[in-house]
Structure formats: structure tokens, C-alpha cells
Amino acid sequence: MMLEPDKRSYCFGVADKLEAERDLTDDEFSAVLLCDEPGFDEYLSEKARAIREKYYGKAVYLRGLIEFTNYCKNNCYYCGIRRGNANAERYRLSEEQIISCCDMGYDLGFRTFVLQGGEDPYYTDDKVVSIVKAIKEGHPDCAVTLSIGEREKDSYQKFFDAGADRYLLRHETADKEHYEMLHPSELSFDHRMQCLRDLKEIGYQVGCGMMVGSPYQKTEHLVKDLRFLQGFKPEMVGIGPFIPHHDTQFADCEAGTVDMTLRLLSMIRLLLPDVLLPATTALGTIDPRGREKGILAGANVVMPNLSPSDVRGKYLLYDNKICTGDEAAECIRCMAMRISSVGYETVVSRGDHAAFGME
Ligand code: 5AD
Ligand code: FES
Image 1 (spheres, helix red, strand yellow):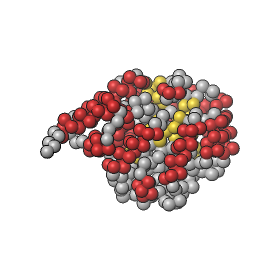
Image 2 (cartoon, helix red, strand yellow):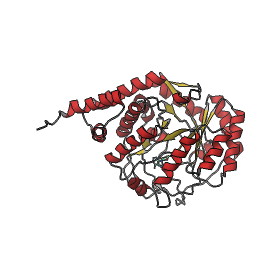
Image 3 (cartoon, protein in one colour):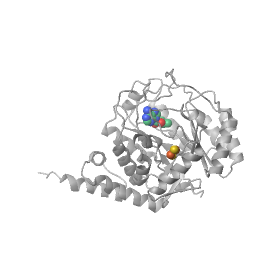
Image 4 (cartoon, protein in one colour):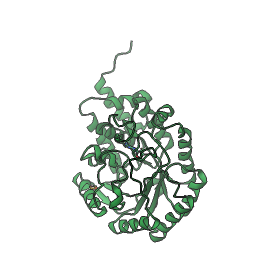
């Protein structure tokens, strides 16, 4: 008869295995996700920090986030800017406004601009191409990241040819049934996954990721997420806690927790040692020191908001979002202080993934 393994030494042993082999069985992944032994989080995050420091030292990369439209043709159940939310005050930035955000961001030290928006057909392929080209012409030493949702492969190719370097498209959940509980039937899990594969094939540095603690999420879904990340090998993984938005059908659902988000950040760092891992705004929203804790759990990217202050308060995917009232300059100063308070430093660099070697 097999003896019940001692729970404590089992959990710590599995963490050692994750560090050494960058792989676990599904049961072992679950054990790490569920472990409630005292000292376990610190044990895991120490390993994650050691690996991130081996690859990236104490550097934290800055990405200037420009939320350029909150119009969205989709109706994701969790999202505050979904088309069905008649209470969302909509806005769009012109090409000139976007460029001037980048110019200001450049002077503040940003070398990556992330253009994020709802899925807004107003920004045709030609418009996106024109915006990307203008930014790259003005700042050839900068990387441009797009985060504008699902499009067809030929559109992604046009943006890439125009100079876009990276693309963020969270997979949201790697479980098809779970995906269908978070999205209306007009959105398809298979198409989202196809988009991710297309982006990779074209040559983008790709970011995917999921919400932590989204409605109906079970441990087995997170295990699938980890398995997906392991196989897909994205250059970046954006994760943050789910936070309910009062104008959605998930208004009364519980938010994801800081602890589970931090644990996943550490696990992802151990699984994909040189991945770019942001400490997200959502993490900073559920805990005043969430982003600092994220850095200590293995994250190495932060994305301060560069959007013009008059539209900031309108890009509300979830309730109580932080940094909506601050000028970009204040925001970046605050961020640099936060990062240095935990012994790390924000750097001026494109911060490409190691495999892209553009440093
Ligand atoms: N809580 C947390 N994250 C959210 N997102 C959308 N709505 C919420 C919410 N209520 C995340 C999604 C999306 C990214 C831009 O923001 O993962 O991909
Ligand atoms: Fe934005 Fe502190 S990081 S105000």
C-alpha cells in the first residue's frame, strides 16, 4: 500500500521539481495551486525572483499604455466596456492625439508603446497601419505593441509589415467550456486560439494570459492555462485578478485574490524563465501594493498609463481602477518609486524578449 505523502514536504518538493524541470503533472500543478502550507508562497516566490534576476537582473521594463478607444463591438460578460453597457461614456483618440501621447511618453523615457482598445471597427486596417507607421517614423528606436483584439490574419500581417513588433491578446481561459461561460456565443474559443497562432506565425512577440478568479474558474482550468502557456511559449504573459464591474452580469461575483495571482506569477516565471511578466493594473487595484508584490513574485514589467487624463476615467473594464486621475508624468514617477521601494529599478529600454535579441 502506498503511504500518504507528508503534505508539507510534498508541496515543497513539487515546487523544487517545477524549478528544476520546468514541468509538472496536472496533479502536481493543482497541488501547487492549492497548497496552504505556511511559508509556501515565500518559498515559491524566492525561486521565481532568483530566476528572473538570472535573466533580467533587477530591471523592470516600462510599457506606456495608450487606451485609444473604449468602443467595442463585443459583449464579453465580464467587461465594463462591452457594447451592451449603455452607461459607458465612449471616446476615441485621433491619430494626432495618439502620436502626441507617444511623443510625451518618449520624453518621459518610454521606449515601448502599447496601443490598447476595444474591438472598434472605426479603426480600419488602413487607420491602424497609418498610426503604427507614424509612431515608428517618429521613434524608430521604440517598439509598438498592439492590443486591439481579434482580426483576420491578413490584417495582423499588414500591421506587422507597417512596423508593429508585438501583440497582446489574452486567451482569457484555455478551457473551451469555461470560455463559453464568460463570452456570448458569437465569440469563439477556437477563433481566439487561431488568432494567437497566426500572430506567432507572422513573427510578432506575442502576449497572452488569463484573469485569475474569473467567474466559474476552477483549479483544473488554471492547470489547463499553465499547460497552454507551456506549449504556446508566448513572449509575454499578462495575468491579473478578475474584478467585477457594476454594469455587467458578473457584478455580484467575487474578485480574484492577490494571493492566487501572486502564486500564478511565480509559477509562470518558473515555467517560462525568460518570459516578460507584467505586474498589472488590476493587481494594483485589488491591493494598494499589488504591483510591488507582483514584482517580488517574479514579474518584470509594468505598464503605466499614458492616455490623456480626460479619457482615463472612461476606460473602465472593472470597478475602482487605479491611476485614472493622474497625469502620465506623475504616474511614472510614482511607479519608479514603487519599484525602487522593493529593490528593483525601472529602465529605459525596449525590453524585448531575450529570444528577440534587439537590445
Ligand atoms: N476584471 C479584470 N480584468 C478584466 N479584463 C476585462 N475585464 C476585466 C475585469 N472585469 C481583462 C481581460 C482583457 C484585458 C484587456 O482586461 O483579460 O483581455
Ligand atoms: Fe499611476 Fe502610481 S503608478 S499613480
